[in-house]
Image 1 (tube, rainbow, N blue to C red):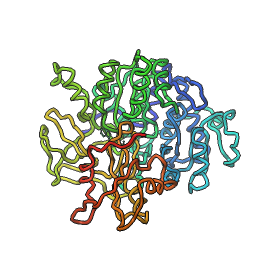
Image 2 (cartoon, rainbow, N blue to C red; image 1 turned 45 degrees about the vertical axis):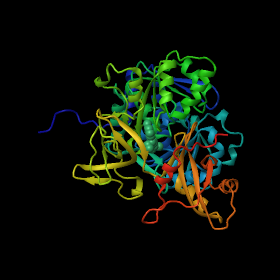
Image 3 (cartoon, protein in one colour; image 1 turned 60 degrees about the vertical axis):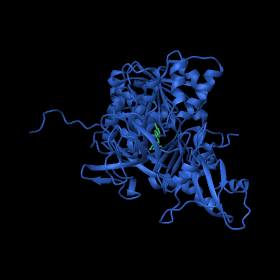
Image 4 (cartoon, rainbow, N blue to C red; image 1 turned 180 degrees about the horizontal axis):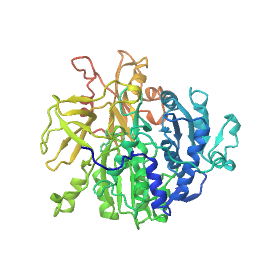
Length: 547
Ligand code: AMP
């Protein structure tokens, strides 16, 4: 027997429709690349999103087509979140920190039809525009007065505000199957080329419910949320959706991610909750500390993307009365999987013990099932000291990569299909996961991936190098940076500086390894593969030069 409730697909457009109707007066504040602070209400944002939906249709975008962005966190970017996905097309948020070659590869792979960009990325757009195969229209996310003086370098360049002006908002969001693709993010956190993760309307709306809950990110109409995490990193962890679902105020920092700009915005807009990777908080805390400042309204901050250093959650708690919510997830998980919110079992613990709980990555949110397995795939019991591979499943976890890149990524067992995260962790007796290592061969620096294999391939192309392994080494500012371990060819005289200079122009500058260590031999396994886990162990205590 079926239930007798309305059949209503879970669509992203329903979030902006709800915000418009029930929180129409709530504001979205943005620091613009044009330099000023911009404010608009959800009512205004909804109107502009509908006009933009018509504008992209007028450009020839059809259901399922990919529309790309190269943009900071701001209201125009959010309008595209709703205009593109809401109209049935797929929003593809490109990461502007990647090398232009990678951006071209990704835009071609995604078959992007239109690319919207913030003015900061005009030089990048000029570097890639002649090389992409499918992009038919380039749109500067500004008004006519702020178009670049040399706009004629890209014939046919369009202007966001002109596109809007040409339309009215007589438009009804279409209804379609909730499993329709809504947005696409590429991750470099795997081996090989970046891979696309294609979210659906259903997965996005369900994830939005889940992250809104009190023991997750706890999003309320009374919050003022400043997502420092970029909208090109897994949709800013879902906050642009959760803000609409809950009617929260949103504050977008644009390109101003330094400590001073962020602090000013926190105070001026009475921000209560924020979210970002540990690196950004270091800059903010340094600014606040150096100037003897306090946070007058901020009470919570979500930290994830990399492990939150225990000293950071202590500093936030002890010195600024800000509760850190340590969270873990990944692009393939939409992204939120666990949050370190307390349980009754923690009542009565002293502050030090509570910090101990908070420094773990936390417990699974509803919707994400999680288990830790040994090398034979057998589940490890909670409360054991042994670490194993973290496997997840749930309605907002990836089933396969875009265009089936890399084949079937899942582990199939008697208890269903699981996605192996590439993280290694142990689980305490209360179900709080603690990441202890990573089995995937990548390095995460300031929240961004660096492909160790790409770096090894370049190093090994040097005539003096016999073998090179690239591993993550601890760095006080960036969390991890690449360390190159090199075995020279017999008689070769290559030096550290020569080798580092060899990377120039071959990769984004920030990918260049921070240091080179020459060794007599690199440990190899039975199949001849480099045993990088042994090297990681060997250089565990190694601190990179910070100069
Ligand atoms: P991304 O797909 O770029 O979001 O990266 C996801 C990966 O970042 C995870 O698989 C982890 O390796 C790492 N990560 C994310 N959050 C945390 C955290 N709280 N602690 C440790 N590692 C994390």
